[in-house]
Image (cartoon, rainbow, N blue to C red; front, side, top):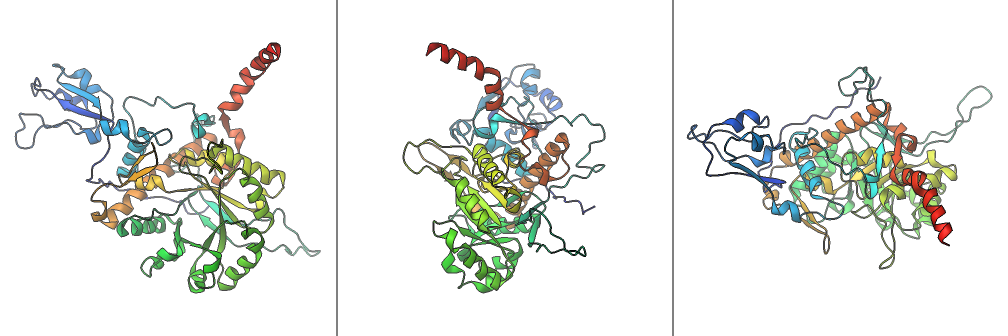
Length: 469
């Protein structure tokens, strides 16, 4: 049995202007009876340090919105109101509740509990229209986190063989391709250009501690960052390969951006990279209408790992204004099924990114056909970043973030991944899946709203439309 992978979270508050959903206010009619301190298990209410006879101001940060204090206050002195920032943040995809959830996960590495209960969404666009099969959750022996049944979240990057060939004497004739194991099916995608040095260094150190990877453009790999080359995916242009042979020699994985010329150049470029060292090669492909055809041709041309990159909403990148688009769930399924039809799916690793906003999106993306995922914005939201989608995408980093220590920033990212890892284990355990590799394309363990809707009402409405015609 392989060594169990464990992430070590630590309580790591961040004293910046954080976001909260409700603001608690104590009215002047409070009689300081302390009833709220007894009923609040989250310690949002405490007596004043200077004068214990009086109640201190409520601590909105720890509130989980159970409303118990409101109900139990004998004078009705407590009020909760929606915070204005909460109402304005996000948009159609990055909803306000996502920011609250990610912030709390980064705080302590635990799965947040909401006193008011989970009210959805249970349907909608993208991953919200997809549910995972939890039929195994009733098994009394299941204990994936604490240990009776080991659950592996490790995935493998690299080219695999469809079959093995043996000689007359039983000797292996097939050439086994090199691969790289990642203990969690999540890597860190390219950081924003305007991040302060402490945040970029923290992302690199967090990737190293988690034993995963971060994608970095070659120009950003300074000697100080280069110490963590084992956990860096070096992003290059074809023209930069000759110039950075020394860096490629020490790297385990390099990445190239897809261009129309790359398909013909790929064998020669791979040879250049192999001569410098043993690095695997990722091809980053922007998601367009023809992405599945591009991925298939690259895989047949020898690509080992292909990273399909949607926009931050998880949508196709439109080629013209007003053009319809697919969403990340359907994009991944289309790419996966194209490779299955071409009988080459097992030969290539698929990374998916764009719109991966919550912990549950990781197993859902894998069920659709991805081998693993890449994230960027959740790491920044864990540090207090805010996204405004309308009328255009704006990312606002909190004031003072550049002064926070690398240790604190790093730990909050590790805490976030700890919470995501715990949820991945729970989902896999509830589905009865013991290896993350088996999640890939396992659509029988998922329910898709569109399919259920079509099965239930499709024939009925089809008949009506036919009659009308």
